[in-house]
Length: 325
Image: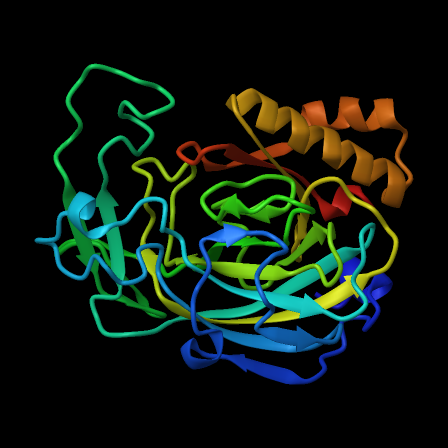
């Protein structure tokens, strides 16, 4: 993607700078909250590249199909995050741009994990939707995951379609569970947050404080049972900075479309946020009339359901770039 918001508006204009290795040793303790109170593990300049070693959502605790998730997992210590990464020059009102270069599975096979966890998932009673029904039985799936594909079972091999499930910046004053998505990004579980995409986040605090983790080998829309093909990975991202161009919610672009991301409950409110922010983007940066954009998205807008299982649901609203020229 030669022309993007990042290359036209970014401080580094998308030009790569220094490469930083964020290994497990450099990271030390992984974080389970997004907030401005942790000490940054890296200080980088706009344009720099970060190669990060992420854990899966369970930090490797579910290592066999015989595991009991409720016995192994210590809720709310789930979804471990690399970071925070301090971006020099970032202040409130700026935008942090993150280009995703690659996501490569790491660690011993089977590297992929999915699980049924009590009171968690899209078709079960949860703490938010409290029911008297007994929970589903706890079950674990382990899958071999390589860049050539994902061995779902003896008969089915899924394509390797990796993305970062949890990516974002710090909120201004809160320290919030990394399981919860919101205006700062975090656990959006949107499959388009993938290699080739650039994701934009509204800076709330000095340095931005970028966090990332929770990579998936693939995932269907909605992340129905609550867990995708959860994998540890080596993630390569490039971080740039757009000065004083405020946005309210995360945005994404790739070669084919632009997308805005909203997180809320109920699902229709997440959809409203996403579409409203897409109209604002079309008006502010592409010269559309607001009402014309409203009419047009009614006819040509597309929706991506990221998750319907997290504390807030995430929806992406998109429009093909060919219509914006």
